[in-house]
Image (cartoon, rainbow, N blue to C red; front, side, top):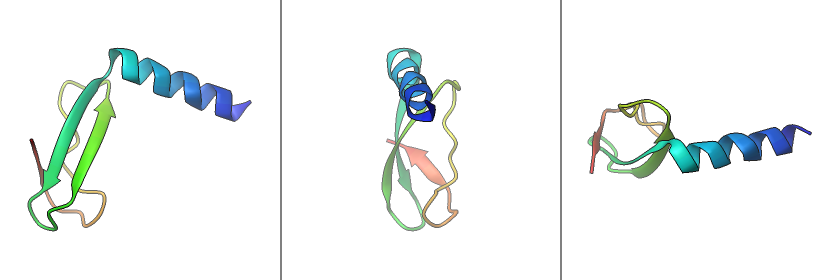
Length: 54
């Protein structure tokens, strides 16, 4: 049952969410973030550094 709810959440985000491509200024990792927020979360999940939007 949980998997069905997760798929619904992901589907809704893909349809109406904002997609951001980010690059960490510290470790240089690239990530993609899908969010309902108008601005992305700029904290790198790999190292805790600050990301910039590409």
